[in-house]
Length: 228
Image (tube, rainbow, N blue to C red; front, side):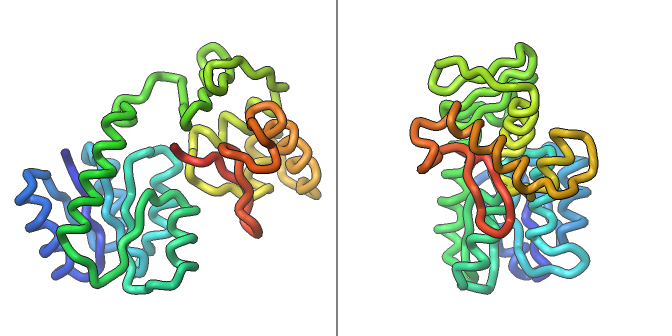
């Protein structure tokens, strides 16, 4: 397994690398978010350990970029312990969060846990045209949606919204971004239109639309499909 460690503190990168190599992982290094993105483009990376506060491009922005076309596990590091930093990182697509200073053995345990989940779900060999999140399956080859094995009928616009969010599960998108992707036009006064479609999608895919499992709101930011 190939792991990318990204932190602007080279001593931290070197220390993590030693522990990972002891576990027989192949390790790649980067010292800012931009460098991390370049490594992921060139190498077959299976997991990223990403610091939040870095020059050039911080870990949050790098995570958002990675989530545009990658579903690999991301563990975030930060010297900050406030809940707001943790919530922001997780909402932007991170899978786990470790606060500095950390116990290296705990970090390795979290790495192994994420890689087990990643490989057991087959995330490293995605089925062409199919995205999954728990019991939610969007099959773009057949233009079908299933929830826990039951077919769900969506309108073309509802399907576009759900497909877009499901393909980027775990990442939060604003109302404007959702509108522009689904309607292919600039978003003007789009809040109510998107909200109506989100409500209709929830009514069709959620067991309890008032307590959604899949399609969730992130207050003040937008919507996301929960990643399972």
